[in-house]
Length: 409
Image 1 (cartoon, rainbow, N blue to C red):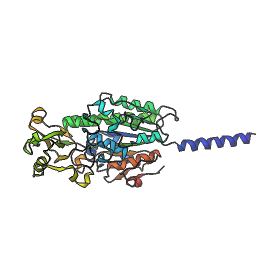
Image 2: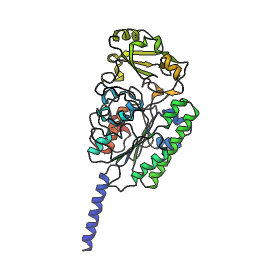
Image 3: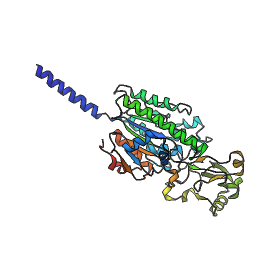
Image 4: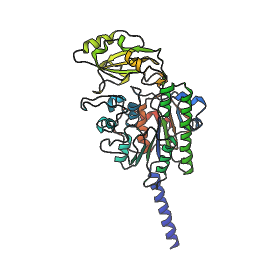
């Protein structure tokens, strides 16, 4: 009888072990908006630098998709599709199928309308549909019922929600019993991007913001370690784009390029603008923009460079103008109201100043490995593989990461 009990105990332990191993390791996806890879060289990121040394680092950064803006690239990271394919083509956009609505970061009603997001399936929707639990501590689109699905846990975005409180919410989710603990978690910080816009990438305040986010990540790492989860958890820490300096001395005035009265809508001013001519003025606008202009290039949407993979989506305006790095596009009226300064993104994704951070750390990754620069569409198939779920059709390449994976679920 004693031997039978022993055999039953061994069998139970084996079954329990097999069940635990079948559960995906917790995957935490962290976005530090606007974090340039060279910010790691400022001596204020002990946590991120240690994670990079002990994990995987894209030493020259990750290449964002065009346009190098926040919402388009965050949605690319979780869908594996470029903005032209997933439909979030700009931070500001219009859609003839959603008339009289301007999608902007400040329009909460538009942001909550799933029609803007339903063109693709983000990773948390696939995870929920395939039996996993997800929890999002902010991420563009994560508080919307995309295709009728929300994460198991989510919070409406609040810019003023403190960084430490965001970390504590993630740790609270991780405190749950295994059966109800989320398998996939997002964590988002905007402080570095906010400081970069206001003070420029070289500003002391931007460096201070980098240090503050690093400290918050230290709180996360310590919390995971205290709970015994750090050896199990896989972390992918990245950004959506970089940041470049602006100056009121480096501005191309649209008034000197074309008759602005012939344009019905500009979206938006800055490094990148989309122009929609008034009816009957298309040829006039096209001719004006076709002339050579210093520090800016303009194209009809159908003639954009193929490497941008942009311009077929109906939400893309008829004409696109892109400024040279560190230059801005403006009108005389906008210059008087809000002259450019500080920093911005939205420039050519191939410019090194637009490069995004990528660090991966955890049991699935080789220690101390480096990656060449790669496209951010590749992140999505990596996330799907780490979660052990079937990905949706995408444009990414899992092969990018095969040399730095220790084991592939």
